[in-house]
Image (cartoon, rainbow, N blue to C red; front, side, top):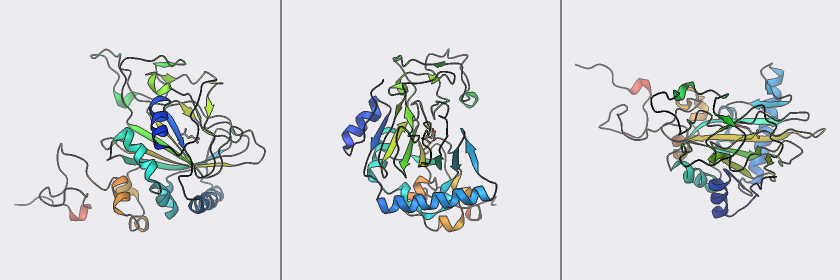
Length: 301
Ligand SMILES: O=C(O)CCC(=O)C(=O)O
């Protein structure tokens, strides 16, 4: 079996694991009282979505509560509760990364393993003919450059994403802990859906921990083989500041949530501009925050 990451509180070891294995596990990061409030909110929302006929269920019995930022203040608190987790994202993406989406996957009993994948599935292999390259927007989850080995290449496309999953319950090999193929981020390949990945390593961790992975790392929700345990996680998918987030927060955030945002959360949710290959709003004034349509200048004479 491949050697996987083990939970740590040492930032240096976490950085080392993230660089070398493609993921790291940090324990004792989220305050336990906050995690308990998150757990209650996730379960309550999941039940309400089932009752409303809106439950999104995959892989047998994994219910995904989508776009949780609109579904409770606790999810904003979780997003910025740990400087360590933000520092690890900065380590991979630089300081101006933003949130692309946030979900709560609940792997229930009798859940099969999700398809092995990388979140950065569109990453081009560097060995492409420059004149017949595949358009980035046309690279789907099932790609031609798939493989099962982790042969290291000399040149690789860099990571543009970091995904976090917070352990809202204990994550165990039995209850569906996220599984990883250590080192796969350096292969330049995407995983073959038809391979069984029997030696993928579960990221076992106690409640209150977080796993962070490089967008190129192969991973999946593990199979939940328990009779009665619900493995609950909350994901934060972070992207480099020039990447289009999955959720357009300035457009879709509920007004009562927007009122709660502090400066750091506003930046993370994409309410600020990044850097200049053009301008937004009134360039002679506040360059940093986007202005709503009502405050944007229109035609003048
Ligand atoms: O639920 C998990 O453990 C992992 C979820 C996942 O694979 C993803 O968000 O890309």
